[in-house]
Image 1 (tube, rainbow, N blue to C red):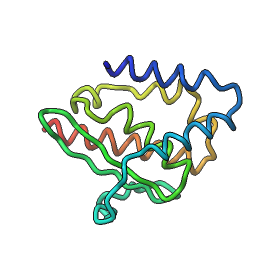
Image 2: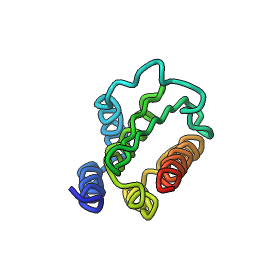
Image 3: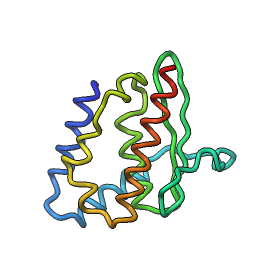
Length: 137
């Protein structure tokens, strides 16, 4: 599936729900499906700064593709990072770097989060972009 197809799939999934309470439930379910994150990887260098809750993001470059693994100690935040990982993991770093992450705006996620969670979302996106940019070198 292409990046555009995956983002469209997320947009369509969110459009199935009229209420944001239902969309939050969907995010929580996404977080529950996140692959287990090893305790030994919950280190300071993997912690995303700017998030109120603790969010760890690990990456690995394999065969030219960037793979992400993540966890959070808060259920909605875990859902948010899970959403981002599901879209961007397994993609070339150049493709991630070139993306505008516009689907996040399109589903209304940032606008429907508390200010601290919205800041955390921006920090997560910035970290993914930073990892992608660093991996292109």
